[in-house]
Length: 223
Image 1: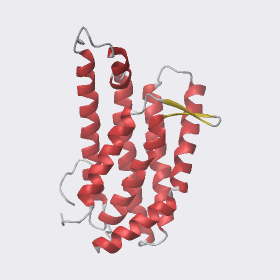
Image 2 (image 1 turned 120 degrees about the vertical axis):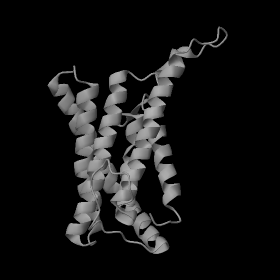
Image 3 (image 1 turned 90 degrees about the vertical axis):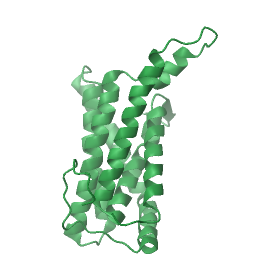
Protein backbone atom coordinates (compact mmCIF):
# COMPACT_ATOMS: atom_id res chain seq x y z
CA UNK A 1 0.00 0.00 0.00
CA UNK A 2 1.28 3.45 -0.92
CA UNK A 3 2.48 5.59 1.99
CA UNK A 4 0.28 8.56 2.84
CA UNK A 5 0.85 11.47 5.19
CA UNK A 6 -2.39 11.27 7.17
CA UNK A 7 -3.81 7.76 6.79
CA UNK A 8 -2.11 6.24 9.83
CA UNK A 9 -3.03 9.19 12.05
CA UNK A 10 -6.65 9.10 10.89
CA UNK A 11 -6.80 5.35 11.51
CA UNK A 12 -5.52 5.81 15.06
CA UNK A 13 -8.03 8.59 15.75
CA UNK A 14 -10.80 6.39 14.31
CA UNK A 15 -9.92 3.53 16.68
CA UNK A 16 -9.68 5.90 19.66
CA UNK A 17 -13.11 7.41 18.92
CA UNK A 18 -14.55 3.91 18.58
CA UNK A 19 -13.15 2.78 21.93
CA UNK A 20 -14.27 5.96 23.69
CA UNK A 21 -17.78 5.58 22.28
CA UNK A 22 -17.96 2.14 23.90
CA UNK A 23 -16.71 3.50 27.23
CA UNK A 24 -19.26 6.34 27.35
CA UNK A 25 -22.09 4.10 26.15
CA UNK A 26 -23.55 3.35 29.62
CA UNK A 27 -24.28 7.05 30.20
CA UNK A 28 -27.86 7.98 29.31
CA UNK A 29 -28.35 11.59 28.23
CA UNK A 30 -31.48 13.72 27.99
CA UNK A 31 -31.36 15.91 24.87
CA UNK A 32 -34.66 17.76 24.66
CA UNK A 33 -37.38 15.11 24.45
CA UNK A 34 -34.92 12.40 23.41
CA UNK A 35 -33.02 9.93 25.56
CA UNK A 36 -29.73 8.90 24.01
CA UNK A 37 -26.76 6.91 25.20
CA UNK A 38 -23.36 8.56 25.28
CA UNK A 39 -22.29 6.28 22.44
CA UNK A 40 -24.98 7.66 20.10
CA UNK A 41 -23.45 11.12 20.43
CA UNK A 42 -20.03 9.87 19.34
CA UNK A 43 -20.35 6.60 17.41
CA UNK A 44 -21.79 8.17 14.20
CA UNK A 45 -18.46 9.96 13.81
CA UNK A 46 -16.91 6.59 12.98
CA UNK A 47 -19.15 6.39 9.90
CA UNK A 48 -17.83 9.77 8.77
CA UNK A 49 -14.33 8.33 9.14
CA UNK A 50 -15.43 5.33 7.10
CA UNK A 51 -16.65 7.64 4.33
CA UNK A 52 -13.35 9.53 4.35
CA UNK A 53 -11.24 6.35 4.26
CA UNK A 54 -13.18 4.87 1.34
CA UNK A 55 -13.60 8.07 -0.66
CA UNK A 56 -9.99 9.22 -0.40
CA UNK A 57 -7.88 6.09 0.16
CA UNK A 58 -10.16 3.32 -1.11
CA UNK A 59 -12.02 0.32 0.25
CA UNK A 60 -8.83 -1.56 1.17
CA UNK A 61 -7.73 1.22 3.54
CA UNK A 62 -11.20 1.33 5.06
CA UNK A 63 -11.20 -2.46 5.48
CA UNK A 64 -7.91 -2.28 7.37
CA UNK A 65 -9.21 0.46 9.67
CA UNK A 66 -12.42 -1.49 10.35
CA UNK A 67 -10.49 -4.60 11.40
CA UNK A 68 -8.22 -2.54 13.66
CA UNK A 69 -11.31 -1.03 15.29
CA UNK A 70 -12.86 -4.48 15.66
CA UNK A 71 -9.72 -5.76 17.39
CA UNK A 72 -9.66 -2.77 19.74
CA UNK A 73 -13.33 -3.26 20.67
CA UNK A 74 -12.80 -6.97 21.20
CA UNK A 75 -9.81 -6.38 23.48
CA UNK A 76 -11.74 -3.77 25.46
CA UNK A 77 -14.62 -6.19 25.99
CA UNK A 78 -12.43 -9.15 26.99
CA UNK A 79 -10.00 -7.36 29.28
CA UNK A 80 -12.77 -5.21 30.72
CA UNK A 81 -14.54 -8.39 31.82
CA UNK A 82 -11.31 -9.81 33.24
CA UNK A 83 -10.61 -6.63 35.21
CA UNK A 84 -14.16 -6.61 36.61
CA UNK A 85 -13.90 -10.28 37.62
CA UNK A 86 -10.65 -9.82 39.53
CA UNK A 87 -11.27 -9.41 43.29
CA UNK A 88 -11.02 -5.75 44.37
CA UNK A 89 -8.59 -4.67 47.07
CA UNK A 90 -10.27 -4.42 50.51
CA UNK A 91 -9.65 -0.67 50.75
CA UNK A 92 -10.91 0.06 47.20
CA UNK A 93 -14.60 0.91 47.16
CA UNK A 94 -15.29 1.67 43.50
CA UNK A 95 -15.94 -1.86 42.25
CA UNK A 96 -19.58 -1.23 41.40
CA UNK A 97 -18.83 1.96 39.48
CA UNK A 98 -15.99 0.20 37.65
CA UNK A 99 -18.23 -2.74 36.79
CA UNK A 100 -20.91 -0.38 35.44
CA UNK A 101 -18.47 1.04 32.88
CA UNK A 102 -16.43 -2.03 31.96
CA UNK A 103 -18.68 -4.94 32.84
CA UNK A 104 -20.61 -5.35 29.62
CA UNK A 105 -23.43 -7.88 29.54
CA UNK A 106 -22.15 -10.55 27.10
CA UNK A 107 -25.01 -10.13 24.64
CA UNK A 108 -24.44 -6.36 24.54
CA UNK A 109 -20.76 -6.89 23.81
CA UNK A 110 -21.61 -9.38 21.06
CA UNK A 111 -24.30 -7.09 19.66
CA UNK A 112 -21.88 -4.16 19.55
CA UNK A 113 -19.12 -6.13 17.82
CA UNK A 114 -21.34 -7.83 15.23
CA UNK A 115 -23.27 -4.64 14.45
CA UNK A 116 -20.11 -2.58 14.13
CA UNK A 117 -18.46 -5.10 11.80
CA UNK A 118 -21.49 -5.55 9.54
CA UNK A 119 -22.48 -1.88 9.54
CA UNK A 120 -19.03 -0.49 8.79
CA UNK A 121 -18.40 -2.90 5.93
CA UNK A 122 -21.84 -2.19 4.48
CA UNK A 123 -21.11 1.54 4.70
CA UNK A 124 -17.72 1.25 2.98
CA UNK A 125 -18.95 -1.16 0.30
CA UNK A 126 -21.86 1.14 -0.58
CA UNK A 127 -19.55 4.14 -0.63
CA UNK A 128 -17.07 2.49 -2.97
CA UNK A 129 -19.72 1.14 -5.35
CA UNK A 130 -21.57 4.46 -5.53
CA UNK A 131 -18.29 6.22 -6.33
CA UNK A 132 -17.81 3.90 -9.29
CA UNK A 133 -21.43 4.40 -10.35
CA UNK A 134 -21.21 8.22 -10.21
CA UNK A 135 -17.59 8.28 -11.47
CA UNK A 136 -16.60 10.43 -8.53
CA UNK A 137 -19.24 13.13 -8.82
CA UNK A 138 -21.96 14.08 -6.31
CA UNK A 139 -20.13 13.16 -3.11
CA UNK A 140 -23.27 13.80 -1.07
CA UNK A 141 -25.03 10.85 -2.73
CA UNK A 142 -22.27 8.58 -1.43
CA UNK A 143 -21.97 9.96 2.10
CA UNK A 144 -25.72 9.87 2.66
CA UNK A 145 -26.38 6.70 0.65
CA UNK A 146 -23.71 4.74 2.52
CA UNK A 147 -25.08 5.98 5.84
CA UNK A 148 -28.60 4.87 4.91
CA UNK A 149 -27.41 1.31 4.33
CA UNK A 150 -24.67 1.09 6.95
CA UNK A 151 -26.71 2.52 9.80
CA UNK A 152 -29.71 0.40 8.83
CA UNK A 153 -27.61 -2.75 9.21
CA UNK A 154 -25.81 -1.56 12.34
CA UNK A 155 -28.87 -0.29 14.19
CA UNK A 156 -31.06 -3.27 13.35
CA UNK A 157 -28.46 -5.85 14.37
CA UNK A 158 -27.45 -4.19 17.64
CA UNK A 159 -31.07 -3.77 18.81
CA UNK A 160 -32.22 -7.25 17.74
CA UNK A 161 -29.33 -8.94 19.56
CA UNK A 162 -29.07 -6.67 22.61
CA UNK A 163 -32.83 -6.54 23.23
CA UNK A 164 -33.83 -9.90 21.81
CA UNK A 165 -36.30 -10.55 24.63
CA UNK A 166 -38.05 -7.16 24.38
CA UNK A 167 -41.46 -6.80 22.67
CA UNK A 168 -41.28 -6.30 18.91
CA UNK A 169 -43.02 -2.93 19.18
CA UNK A 170 -40.33 -1.71 21.58
CA UNK A 171 -37.51 -2.96 19.37
CA UNK A 172 -39.07 -1.36 16.29
CA UNK A 173 -39.45 1.97 18.09
CA UNK A 174 -35.82 1.98 19.23
CA UNK A 175 -34.54 0.95 15.79
CA UNK A 176 -36.49 3.64 13.94
CA UNK A 177 -35.73 6.50 16.35
CA UNK A 178 -32.05 5.60 16.63
CA UNK A 179 -31.71 5.14 12.86
CA UNK A 180 -33.33 8.48 12.06
CA UNK A 181 -31.13 10.27 14.61
CA UNK A 182 -27.93 8.73 13.18
CA UNK A 183 -28.86 9.54 9.58
CA UNK A 184 -29.70 13.14 10.48
CA UNK A 185 -26.39 13.35 12.31
CA UNK A 186 -24.48 12.47 9.15
CA UNK A 187 -26.60 14.68 6.90
CA UNK A 188 -25.82 17.66 9.14
CA UNK A 189 -22.14 16.69 9.11
CA UNK A 190 -22.00 16.58 5.29
CA UNK A 191 -20.29 20.00 4.94
CA UNK A 192 -17.55 18.85 7.35
CA UNK A 193 -17.14 15.59 5.42
CA UNK A 194 -16.82 17.58 2.18
CA UNK A 195 -14.13 19.83 3.66
CA UNK A 196 -12.10 16.93 5.05
CA UNK A 197 -12.38 14.82 1.89
CA UNK A 198 -11.36 17.55 -0.52
CA UNK A 199 -8.62 18.77 1.81
CA UNK A 200 -7.12 15.28 2.02
CA UNK A 201 -7.41 14.64 -1.71
CA UNK A 202 -5.54 17.85 -2.42
CA UNK A 203 -2.89 17.25 0.24
CA UNK A 204 -2.34 13.54 -0.47
CA UNK A 205 -2.68 13.88 -4.27
CA UNK A 206 -4.97 10.87 -4.38
CA UNK A 207 -8.55 10.05 -5.37
CA UNK A 208 -9.00 6.29 -5.26
CA UNK A 209 -11.49 4.39 -7.42
CA UNK A 210 -12.03 0.74 -6.50
CA UNK A 211 -12.30 -0.59 -10.06
CA UNK A 212 -10.18 -3.66 -9.38
CA UNK A 213 -10.50 -3.99 -5.62
CA UNK A 214 -11.62 -7.18 -3.92
CA UNK A 215 -14.58 -6.37 -1.67
CA UNK A 216 -14.08 -9.51 0.40
CA UNK A 217 -14.07 -8.17 4.00
CA UNK A 218 -11.74 -10.99 5.08
CA UNK A 219 -9.04 -10.16 2.53
CA UNK A 220 -6.34 -8.30 4.46
CA UNK A 221 -4.03 -7.57 1.54
CA UNK A 222 -3.88 -4.03 0.14
CA UNK A 223 -6.33 -4.65 -2.74
